[in-house]
Image 1 (cartoon, rainbow, N blue to C red):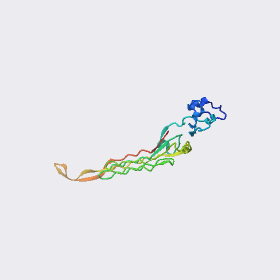
Image 2 (image 1 turned 90 degrees about the horizontal axis):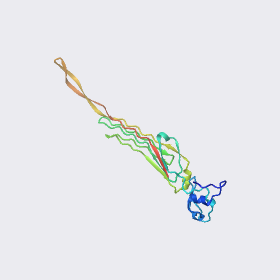
Image 3 (image 1 turned 45 degrees about the vertical axis):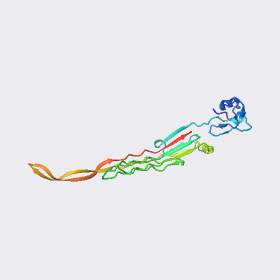
Length: 231
């Protein structure tokens, strides 16, 4: 709990102080001990003269509740995220994944996969784009760009300044799928028939080649997202 804030509240008793901080019923035991307030500001009780009024609105533990969030493109792209109360905050932005290339054939190469879109958590973590796959015989690979940012409780003024502010969320789209490559298809075509006993029999044929045997298109890349965790 948090001790009363003073003013119109009843005076803080020694038993109130001990119930919150647990160091006994002698104020001298509380000198130089750390305190927190509900806005996560913190400090230390005086090392010298100390009184019950020094305990107004203080608490023994940080009010931070640890947590995490995944900010997806479907739910958060173009929205603002309110930064929670924290002591340590870590953010990683992942761009949209590049699309896979189409598999190349012996007649026509597959198409390249499209690039995934960039992602951003405000101005704090901004990615590049995820590269699309290059055509290859094995369906070109894809990549995802990422960018990380963190802040720890060593800088209390920055922590208090960020708490409750908004970060604009951009979660990049996944890259488009690469078009299929093609293999050669062959077909024998008769160009001369002779008749034997009134039955037509092919006596001369040619082989025609067509570039129309699809090998396989690529696949679209996954959308980007933002990972946030705090303690």
